[in-house]
Length: 598
Image (cartoon, rainbow, N blue to C red; front, side):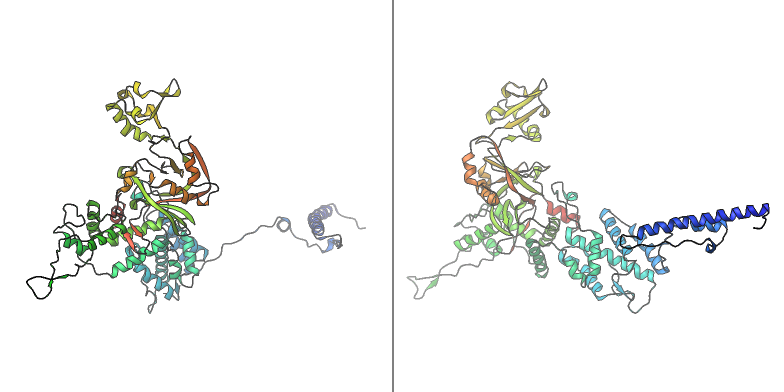
């Protein structure tokens, strides 16, 4: 062994330390790999490491080699065109005018980002034929009760025969997507927010997701057909669309009005009878012939054009039936108003606002459901689309409107008591009690007040009503023949405290216009109605309910909840397939027509 200089020992020690730094981690890594891959059936022999083959390097290189590896994933590189499109989409998403428009733009932007900013509507810088077809359909949106002015459409011929910069082409692409998404949203859920029209239209349209709309259209072979799939499927909606198309093709005739005057009764004579005959398109009867002593031939009998004859009476009764009026053949104020009102209403506007309200409606009303049409004063029970029961109803006055909304009937109550709402106590009962102290006793109401922290019943005859406010008392009407809710009420709990119920005031059902309640819906034949809605319930029918009448108040839970829809339609699909029209009792038609600029 050669003698080694002191300076050489330092170099040897340094190299051996470096060798240990490489060899030991390598052995550890190798052992770990063997442990990971070895099994009972397979043995792996670890080869020994010859230090002589370990490369010698400097400390910096060794540090880099032995440090933990890091992943540095670079974002995909966009070409200039894609980058410009991404910037255009980002700018487009920020250009919203309102909440719904912002949602449309955000959804569109998200889909283009997912697609890598590839075109949906164009090939080689020009619109595809399918895109052109959809552009044309949107431009004709007035034919289905929408407004072409709501959609900013691109030029369908852009890029054809003229080479344009990609920025211009992509701007047209985005315009097309926005118009298509907005058009489909309007088809599916309408243009207006119901509550912006009236607080009594508490309807929440099911708005389709903008990104999902565009995704649907982007993969469809026929985007126009796919767009039309978003129309509501309710038969009444389809019938109103058909009526709107027919109305556009009809020649507008000068309305025939019947002059005001006394009621027209069968058999009477009146100079307005020719107007009534013309209005209902009823011809004069053919003249009969009579024998005379002074003539050798028959002489035609004279026809009295002012006579309200049986043929005309039959025509009036048919008109009354189709308009849900009392079928008595008497042309009184309601019948005359309907006859003349029909001629003065803009039917096209009326159809358009009713189509809008159908677009707000739930897409699925339920296989078995209850639907009460407020301006028609009528409730229907429907099963699988067919009417199984219908009857007259009384709805809220104009100042106590029945709210349009949807919920589920959960219970019914036999022999119900009535907890009087505070608004009625304040505005109606207290003024009556102040002028007549015996008011509460005579009506059979129970009065309660807080006395020493406890609610107690008080004798209404011993109260100084001039010193009492509504907030100090509560009023209850116990079950009985005079109870305002009658013998039964049907509950679908909701924030409006609206429900359906019987009533002792039966005479109101004989009137044609029946807006008399404080908002609840009064049922004309409650026991027949009960039989209809309890069809799917176990052990319950009107026979069992009648046995309970006169007893204690009893609440019964329904086995199956029943969808209930309180709706507002003045253009209705009648049983014979034609469209009928009823009065706009709350003025929703006229307000919506004004907002929509019809």
